[in-house]
Image 1 (cartoon, one colour):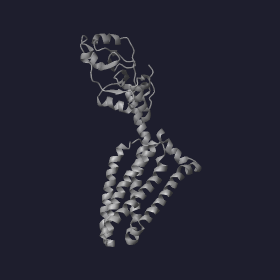
Image 2: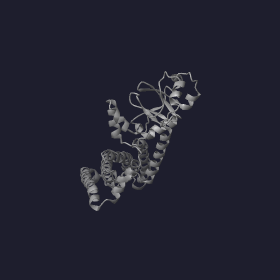
Image 3: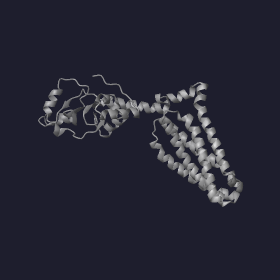
Image 4: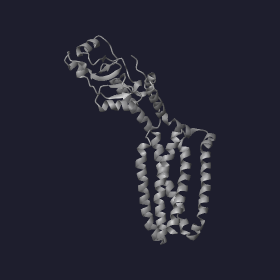
Length: 345
């Protein structure tokens, strides 16, 4: 029997195939990842068969794999038997007494890497593949498990080396003509220009406050810069992670906590320094509180925008940077001026 070539699918396709599975469209299951490695050319048995009957059916026949015997009750999987257990059992024993009635299984749409690790964790020679109603689709044989494991290893190395197919977009963006570079970048810079006009309007709205306490205005560039710096670090980390297949869920918690801690540390260092040099505790308090809030918010914005751009198929390297910068700037200015109005008066 000829093995089906491995296939990788995206999350949207996987979700669609799950819906087809639920609707009873079983041929679609065979196009999915784990099922693509499943082979039906293996020994099968019924729970009521004896060990001697199964061994007699195996003798003299050639199978793609005899590592495990699939025990089926009609179309559904009842269990599996490893060939070494079959050979060691009493020939008169029923298969249902020697089989593993609760073996590790994977559904046809599961990712091939998860299927391999499922088998390894349970120390199984092979892995049964079933559909949503536990109908037996086949067995992933030991040689196929090793091939998938090698493929996944090569893919991880390729990701780290930067020449995987998923990096094609990054390579294309680096070598595209000047006209397309302008087309991809200029719209987002124009969005930033509009945001800068909004920032000017916000400053104008707080003009009386700034005139009343000129010292407040001195710290605006510093607060904006630090928030941008925190956002840029987070954004670079998120884009780098997304490019090598690290999901946003694995990043968001650690980076959000890191943003909060950075905000606390920067605010804590800023307060005594500003009091020492400018001798105004109210302004120092406003600056410290604003830095804490702005740095924490910048980390969240810098995580959210690249993820959203990736979801809609846009290159986060072009759009998320300018957009995140202006969003962070506006938030920083609004937060600082609002806090200073309340604290400084």
